[in-house]
Amino acid sequence: MTNFEGFRCTDCGATVTDDGATRCPECAGSLDARYDLGSVDIDPAALAGRSGGWKHRELLPFVPEGIGEGQTPLVEAPRLAEELGVGRVLIKNEAHNPTGTLTDRGLALVAEAAVRADADTLALPTTGDGGQSAAAYAARAGLLSRSFVPSRATFINKAMINVHGGDMHVVEGRFDDAREAYETKRESMPAAESEAWFPAGPFASPFRHEAAKPVYYEIAEELGWEAPDAVVVPVGHGATLAGVWKGAREFAETGLVAETPRLYAAQPDGCAPVVEALEAGGDPEPWEVPDTVVGSLEIPDPAGGLPAAEAVRASGGDGVAVDDQDLLDSAATIAQHEGLEVSVACGTAAAGAWDLADDGAFDGDETVVVLNTATGNKDADIVRSRLMSQGI
Image (cartoon, rainbow, N blue to C red; front, side, top):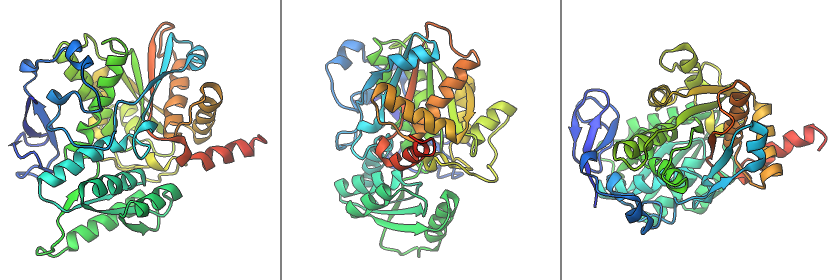
């Protein structure tokens, strides 16, 4: 069923075979799933006969029960292609997931891992989407969820955490304040505490970024088992970009797809630690004063910043930072030109694609994929406010 061999610590190289592992038992470093790619026995015909977001089971540690996440549409955007001056633009629309975000893929795998580890609670600091998703998947798995969210999280996120039965700690401030509150609570819990937490944040376990791989698998299959020329990914924690690149490498190594795409990291210029690192040629450093309307991407010290930067470099891509007003305008343009309701995170990627096109990053006949990570109604008030400021 799977070619999973275990997890490898990205820091010290130790191997872990427990499929419910979170961090390296030797050095507490991040874990990454490993597979025997040489013996993977799948082909396009076999995959065409399967359905669902987890059909690439040979390249996953295990398959969660889930609630219908994945297998999201790849939508042609012909007017955007014309405006960018490229052959095709397609939007990978993750708004079709159960709670409306790509995060659902990761939390489905996390919840299954938590059950296997005999944990009873999914716990995480989150900008909002992760808390909503954790509450939903915890409910499905019969687990508790505890989310630490900044006060600026959207009303929809906060409301739905409660609706799903999750426990929510609203922390005054921004994501770093929520993360500090989470860590303080976790460290202060007595050893004999009856409630067993399973960390559900990005890179707190190997599962969030691992679950992002099928995003790329689905893109390549939809394109007739060919890689797009470029994928523009909005970057917060870095898990999605790292997972997309890992999926691209695995498909190339197994021979399912001949090439890999260039990956472009898009961030708001008010919080762009990964883009700054790519421009400077170093490792990401914490962003001192984060300030952007895109709450989901306002991650000043991303846990996956280094893997994300390494993925971009290895792919031959680049980073692009965009102004808040431009990204809001781009989200509105997609709605008005293509009929798609996308998140302001997608607006970040789209605005980045426009800037990249202006800078000559794309050839005229290339296929460019822009990743929409969430449904547009979570950010509708922000985009509408921008339109109203323009008298629209």
